[in-house]
Amino acid sequence: MTVRRLPLIAALALLTTPALAAPDTTAPTATAAPGSAVPVHTPRDPSPDQLEAHIATLHQQLGITPAQDGAWNAFAQVMRDNAARFHDTIEQRRAKLATLSAPDNMQSYADLITQRAQDLQSLNMAFRTLYNGLSDAQKKAADALFRQSDNHPKQAATH
Image (tube, rainbow, N blue to C red; front, top):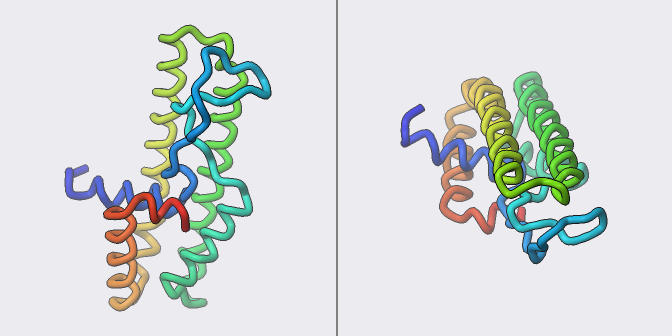
């Protein structure tokens, strides 16, 4: 992967999981017992409703046609699968957080980010398939949309 492609993947991450771009602003705690505040270094994941709303918005923004539904549905399913896996991984991390040593905590976070990177690679492949089937006008709109989200990550996180 070239350095030039990194912003596209970052934009995909922001567009496909909007709540991820927003940092968890809960105050950090020394221990994270069940029901306590979650440390700031544990990312938030979108609710299923937020994800579905985002998928619908992106579908509309890209102007997906019935002929493109096959590639779109595959892309949307990868988003859903990634979100479910991310949610499960975060929940597992939170359940163990109170008993993790500092190095184990860091490794847990690194594992979460590694999984996220792998998920983004899968998402990128599904998006490439979709993108290749878009009209020139749709590609231009997608390019602008992804550039906008890459330049304004906080705005992308709220949409």
